[in-house]
Length: 351
Image 1 (tube, rainbow, N blue to C red):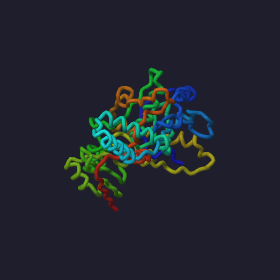
Image 2 (image 1 turned 90 degrees about the vertical axis):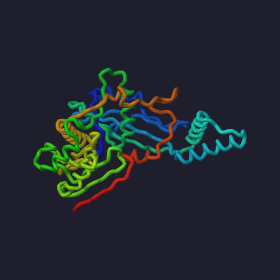
Image 3 (image 1 turned 30 degrees about the vertical axis):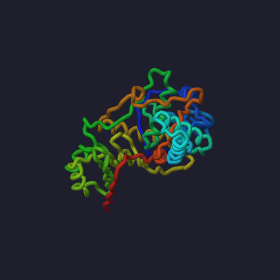
Image 4 (image 1 turned 60 degrees about the horizontal axis):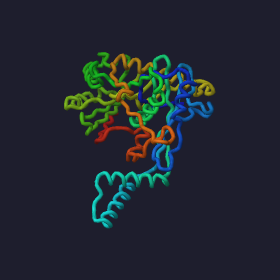
């Protein structure tokens, strides 16, 4: 059983006591969106076996669960109804609504449609915190899902002065992925990636992210000329596959891990409980992160100092419910962990 395949990584200072953490999370417990609201976010019980506990321990850490529900409101449906009402004003009063009135019309339409819209769960993920390293693992490749989870956690932990959340990114000053890839292709034994072994995947993109090139092959050296030409032309390595500590993964320039594959452990299935899997997989990822930070360096921004702006609840509403907002056309893809920047992608596969 694999607990996560893609993760965002944070430094965190949160209580090591599950009961204490659960008490804070309870202040932002999940509730279904109200009639006039389109989105609801909050914390839910981690596992059925643990009852109503909002935070549960495993050896060396604890876990909590974040959920986000949205009402299905297609942007085209909202836009069509807004335009219909604007046309009615023109036909009735002979005038065109101004910018402010159009915004009010859109809010009115959104609230009316939300009252009868279907609700779907867009995000439901268990996050893992490692005590010794103060590492928080958020299992998603979606930036919006990770940001919303962290925003709510910051609000829940706001009364604790020692709370810090810092996003990690690869430090170019210490030699980012592009520099190390160039060195590796020039000399395979130069130790560009330390204990990690490059795998069969690398993604390059232009600075403006308008063009991407994905390369998959048995050996990166087989595509040495093509990768070097892409780098010389101004493209940079935005993600690449690595192997270390028995774990395969793809590291992005934003220090996020995706396509994680843990080694298959033979043994008694009865011993492969959730606690065992959480303990081993979190410990393995923490070791990978530690060595990656040592190798690549790190930069970051304290999320409670501008990196993330916590969502504001509607006045008089239940905690964790945000203001009415129109779901992004890509919301479903985000929730599924698709992520990715806009622009064409070219994939090359080498045998």
